Amino acid sequence: MTVQLLATDLDGTLLRSDRTISARTSEAMAAAQASGIEVVWATARARHSIDELAASCGFTGKAIGANGAVVLDLADGTPVITETTGIESDVVTTAMTRVRELVPGVAFATVGPTRFVAEHDYAAMCVFADHHRHPHEMDVSVDVLAAASEQTVKIVARHPELASVDLFHAVLAAGVGGVELTHSGAPYIEMSAAGVSKASALSVLCAELGIERAAVAAVGDAFNDLPMLRWAGTALTTANAMAEIKAVAHRVLHSNDDDGVAGYLEELVADRR
Image 1 (cartoon, one colour):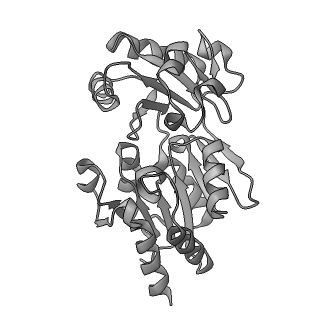
Image 2 (cartoon, one colour):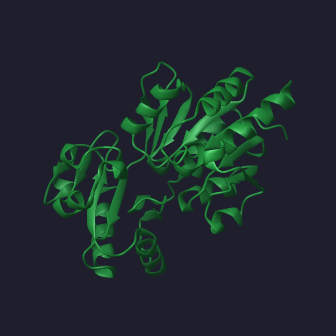
């Protein structure tokens, strides 16, 4: 079936290693949308950094943020949150307690649709690139759940000594109930409400747009992209992706630094012509 919608991850996929969107990629997205192909961003990022990226390249489509917990419409140049799926407060508490039991020394932060609240130890481990905000701009509290003024859409956890991918595998092997555990390649692990992923948000969005699953292509490079790649009719990844992601892809595109997604979009537009 002809591809009608391309869902693309951002970091490590659409973005180059310097975390910018190239002129070629901007032009390819605009040409695809002009030809009738929906382009949807699907990322672990929060609203504020999605907004900044969209402004940098003129993107005005839809975006799935927080690994599927938030959906945004960027059509007017300002991100409008259209869907939010939060984690119940008791589940947040239980999940954090369980992870601390499994890996002592872990520090947490809770992410809301617009707010980020970090434990002191978590903030102390951060640099700007981790969450695209300076640590001093984070709300810091001893009790992140009590300090949160909005529903939690994502829990993030990191360890001062253990690599995030090792933390991910350790927690995944033992299991944490009530949440969807994933890893985006960032220096922390991420948890959303059970059943929430880029795939779940994308399936709802496609139903609203009247686009069949078989007409959807998805591209990503990390563990948090796996549900989306398995759901889409066409699964794509980039040459720089993890081996586990390449194993489920129908096709490996050029790397993110070689504008692999742009090249694929150019092919789709050429085929339509």
